[in-house]
Image (tube, rainbow, N blue to C red; front, side, top):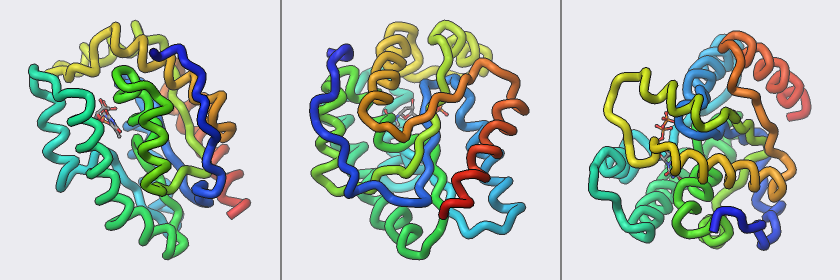
Length: 215
Ligand code: TYD
């Protein structure tokens, strides 16, 4: 299922300027760079909003607890809860920030959905559920790419309980779908996550500076 080409067209009408997303498999280091970029926006006094999905409150909080459970949710249950969490996020946080002209930076969004739930349901199906709801799509996505073996090594070094997404077979499927998405959305850029943190940050700062000039 995960080798499929994504047959639906990309919804250019839903793309929003100033909307940036970091994506990647667990252990790719994107959350560290997310924190660094948010602090950098803050120091530059940029009008911005930094958001994480699943959210830390509402449906997202419940979902995060479910992910730690040994008993996996059914694919449909999982998808429905994630879509509900995302509608809350769009209504409460994302759309108001877009309307206020703020820069938005997100740690995971629709492409995490296409990948993580796409492993069981197919990426095109999951993307279509997001498009049907008219959720905004990012101007630019940075995809932190890393071989799954290295990602797993980093995950196991964290020393805390792992979720059912953090198994090697799942990470392998997930990475394949991420790389498939690059052919679907031309504004996804790969970041080599197998580099020192400070080098990745410098690279992101350069890329963001160029993007912010066009806003
Ligand atoms: P996160 O806290 O970002 O994990 P990490 O910091 O390890 O990258 O995300 C928690 C989990 O949520 C992650 O394993 C992927 C999953 N997820 C989905 O399954 N579907 C989604 O749509 C999103 C946004 C996240």
